[in-house]
Every structure is written in C-alpha cells, then in structure tokens.
Amino acid sequence: MTITKSLEGDGKTLMASVYDRLRADIVDGVRRPGAKLRFDELKETYGVGLSPLREALTRLAAEKLVVLEEHKGFRVAPISRSDLHDLLFMRQEVEMLGIRRSIERGDDQWEAAIVAAIHALGKRVNLTPDGHIDPEWELRHRAFHDSLVAACGSPRLLLLRAQLTDHADRYRRLSHYYHSAGRDHLSEHVALSEAVVSRQAELAERLIRAHLARTVEIILSCEDLQGDGFDD
Image (cartoon, rainbow, N blue to C red):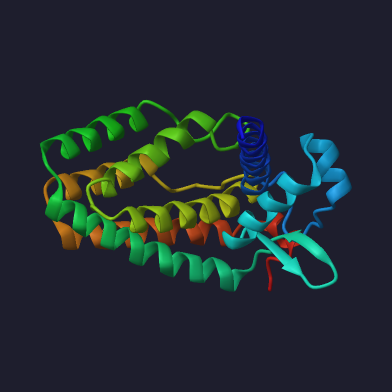
C-alpha cells in the first residue's frame, strides 16, 4: 500500500511539473500559437513519460491553452482578433465585479496592501532598454492588480480571473515588443488605486475598463503578431 501511494504521488508530482513548465512555455510564447505538440519531442524536452504528459495536456486543454483535434493530436491554442476582443469583454466584466465586491467588503488591511502594491510598482520601469517588458515589473504589475480584487470573497471569481489574466498575458508576450508610446502606465495605475481605496466604485469601474481596453488596442497594433494568424 505504501509503495502504491508513493508511485501515485510521484506520478502527480511529474504531471504537475510538466504542466507548470509546458503552461509557462505556452503563456510566454515559447510554444507558438497553433504549433503541434508532438509527444516524442515533449517527452524528451520535459523528461517525462507519456502518462503525466497526457494528463498535463488534458488539463491545459480544459484551460483553453491547448486544443485537441480529432485524428491530429494536441496543438497550442490559436490566437485571433475575435478571441482577443472576447477576452477583453470577459476581463472587463470580471475585473469590475471583483473590484466592486472588494470595495464593499475590503478592510483597512486590504487598503494597505493596495497602497504597498502601487508603491512597489512605481519603483520599477515597465520596459527594458531594448523594448521588452521587464520581468520584475511584470510580477509587481500582476501583484498590484491582484490586490484590487483580493477582498472580493469569491474563490471561483478569483480562479476565473487568474485564467483570463494568463490568456491576456500570452497575447502581450507574443507581441514581443510591447509598444507603449504615449502611455503613462504609472498614472493609470495610481488613478485606479486611488479610486479603489477611496471606495469610488463607479470611477474604478470606468478606469479598469479603459485600462484593459488600452492594452488590447496596443496589442492589436503590433505587426509582429500577424504571422501567428492574428488576422483571423
């Protein structure tokens, strides 16, 4: 019995490991949209057997980051303008709901976490000298947005929101160079934090809608996405 449980535990650990690594490669754009996911290559790259690999792919398919085509196998989920617009719609709705609920339920500790998060974000520039998104800024940026909805009181909303954010991150990272000329990231985030902390729900909702829409507008202008079927 002990041996059986140990083997089961090892299998789950392997599956979790390959899932995390493959998922990161898809979100980061290492695995390009529409690319075929061949078992032989994946087994060699990630050092796992067929069973945990299949489980990981099935889980990623459930998250819509991978698609399973009949008689063709697994592929990285494609990208398209229509999908990006749909993603924007869902993110706006979920973010607004999460912020409104957090404003209604949040306490002083929640407010303090937002203030700390915007302070940390403001100490980092969003782009590296060569025009790429700075990885540390990226972490602080996500932490800030997470703080805005942290008091919503709905684990399911937070789970859905995290999945939508990952899909949005994939689009941003696939753009390679995130052109943000004329955009003041810090001012947008400061205004959003002030509206939320001061409990101005309607203003916060308008700001988050505009903030997310502006990001999509910038992504749609990136020419280097066109080769990935972005005109669909």
